[in-house]
Image (cartoon, rainbow, N blue to C red; front, top):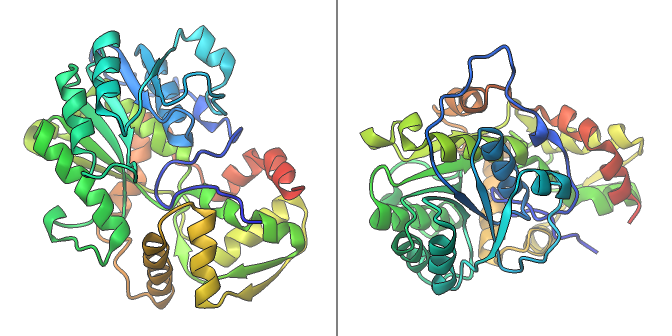
Length: 354
């Protein structure tokens, strides 16, 4: 059985993972300059990035509204029930596929800012969702996008499906809210993607497609914290008034897939062997495990191949800046993969038991 863990370069809905985003800005650093954003509505708070964004924005003084398709649903860590209660977070019904509910949620709460993520169920690249938020009073949106988005948005083709899909969402936001009305936080390759291998790690034999391909394995909590900081501080902090609409966020180390699997095995005390995937089964592995369209899975498989060959441009000239953006916006350094794994050791062990 393959666990549905984490959408490639998107938020995770895995329950009860990591408390890293509870970390507050270092007291020795100058305080983050804050605006008065009013209520902020977070869509997807059951996801790792959304919950981390909510916590970090709240730590900077923001009033947080949680927009949920099912307001009674359990929200996993890092946003614990105690934090939600102590922070006075409010839950409201809102469905990104139903624009009327978005308008109503914005009007009811008075939210002027919102955090959103790509929803594959929207047929119009979420344009109607953004129009509804705007008509409800939302003036500024932070979008969880992908580091795969590079260059001119209009030049990205469907052949590069993951980048293209996210680019279409960014274009829709630009069309509805314009310059200064949104920032796309382009996250790298999430550390939680490694959880796809947990079933095989449990069995002691792990199949890896191009094991030497290296990724940044960014912590979702770091991406969420950057998003939360931008939500509170507004578009000015990234140069939004000057036309900048994207911030890239990637992890501090490039580590091969083989070494990531070995790190997890070492942390939980498991001996493993590795062997290669064939192309047919690896496409299914990512389609089922990440709960993404087959076309997205094929794009990912191709990109992993290019990573291993060294012929891709995924980590380009913006690499150093993207690594530094975690410290720049949150006043704390990015979490390295080994630290992330060690912080989550108990839960990794639990996953390894199923």
